[in-house]
Image 1 (cartoon, rainbow, N blue to C red):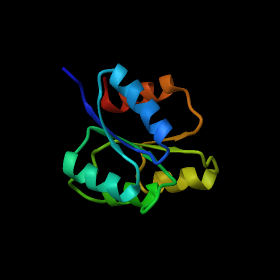
Image 2: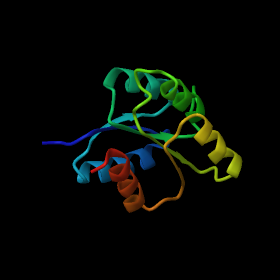
Image 3: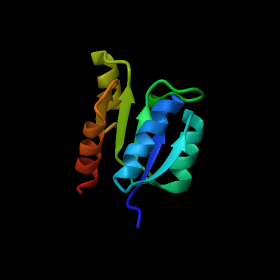
Length: 123
């Protein structure tokens, strides 16, 4: 039986597919969204156990998606891993301000993301 539900909001299709395959191999159910607005809609509809959120997205950027979810009582308990190619300290600070639980920079080791997911979901 598949485990917890994870929403991956990532506009790079190959990276989204790679993350999805890694998550499925670790018995997670995966929902994909390729832009910020679709990701926000799916987060509200599906109420995932965790969200992996890219920062630079079409329609709504990751900061806005994170803020909209973390400042909404119905969704603020969903852990969010913010994933980005932008490694400046100001981006990390902004990620913390909008409520991201973990801020990872690309490229990353797939094992690290699984480790962080397990930490956040207390598995």
